[in-house]
Image 1: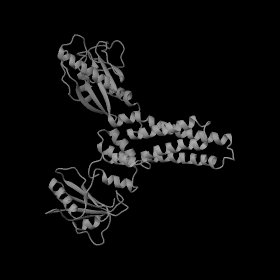
Image 2: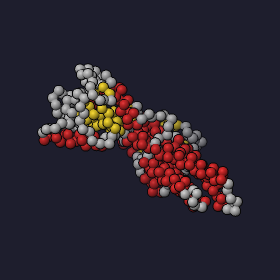
Image 3: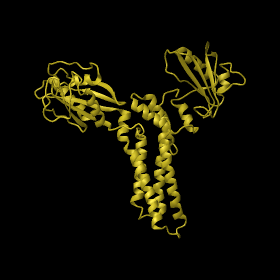
Image 4: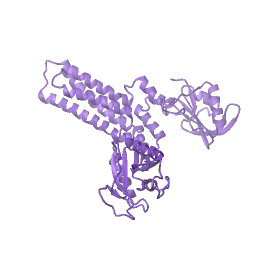
Amino acid sequence: MDTCIAAVCTPAGRGGIAVIRISGEGALVIGRGMFAFPSDVEPNYMYPGTIHGDGFTDYGYAVYFKAPKSFTGEDIVEFHCHGGQQIASGILAKAVSLGCRPADKGEYTKRAFLNGKLSLSSAEGMADMINAESLALLRAGRAMQSEKLAKEIISVQDELKDILARIAVEIDYPEEDATGDELGGIQASIRDVYDKVSVLASSYTCGRKIKEGVSVAICGAPNAGKSSILNALLGYDRAIVSSIAGTTRDTVDARLQIDGILYSLTDTAGIRKGAGEIESIGIDRAYGAAQEADVILSITDNGTYADTPGTGTVIHVFNKTDIITPAGDYDIAVSAKTGEGIEDLKAMISHAAVGELSSSKLYIIEERHKHALDTAAESLHSCLSNFNDFSADILAVDLREAWEALGEITGETASEEIVSRVFEKFCVGK
């Protein structure tokens, strides 16, 4: 792992600045071959000067980070040069010619993990921040990156260690029978841990939508104002609006953030009987969109709603309140033309999709973490179910399995395959 690696850490192409990072044993030696660092180089200080690339020079900055107080925990040298494909690649080529190896995907962050600078869940949070297309995912990723999840998991693991220590007494000293109060206390502690793990796992229902977004299908009869609703939600004209029934014959997609969550909106063809061949294809696609949607907006302007198959939450919307008095059953009445009720509709969509988001709550957003929590919960449930029937050493097996499952989240017990899979998701240079 001490092999010196190098990569361009900024996006390819033209830009004001490019950053080339060298990390590993000998980084400063290689850095001196490209830049006139002073003999008594000061760590964390940015020096201006000439950077030697492959067949050219550039004027920029160089900085040295001394191990272990660096991102990777190794010696690091960074060059901050002018942006540009040829400049950055030429400086990287020079570093490689002096003994560096081109870094693999996510190798800097992987080295940081292997050197104990961050947990595996923190690294995943960093990746989520980098790839975030919504404010909610950015916040959730930041919570993981700042070790909020790791601290919670370690706390639960510590509770399990304490329980295992208490059970070990029963195994080592079987002649000293535990009292009912002692056994009841151990059982209560296991149940408390089980509840904490279960609550964390249940947050994935919302966490999945934070990461993947929410799908919303806008359905209804022709001319009910579905496209107008889409445009009103977006705040600009995305779909064609016409008084002619059947104008929308295919799905129209758009994206919108509501309270930081990304929503994928799909405007669909009007659903009616007796449609022509081409319009029927659009209606079939409307049914398909409704079938897959998390939320379905069923639009009407007369109180009669079209069939909307699917398991998503249905919100019945009466449109055109500017010209029609709402009638029949509906969840909300709006006017796409004037904007009346549109903000309330957004709030209703948000509540149906994710409920009340809390900035202080920890949400599980990775499927890998959900699987580990479910595995831990199953082991804890098994322990509780058999508490009065099995010996202490058998119960301890379930508790150790729960501890190991939780350790996969932080990386403490994660296999090499899991670790590699996590860092393969990163780009080169991170």
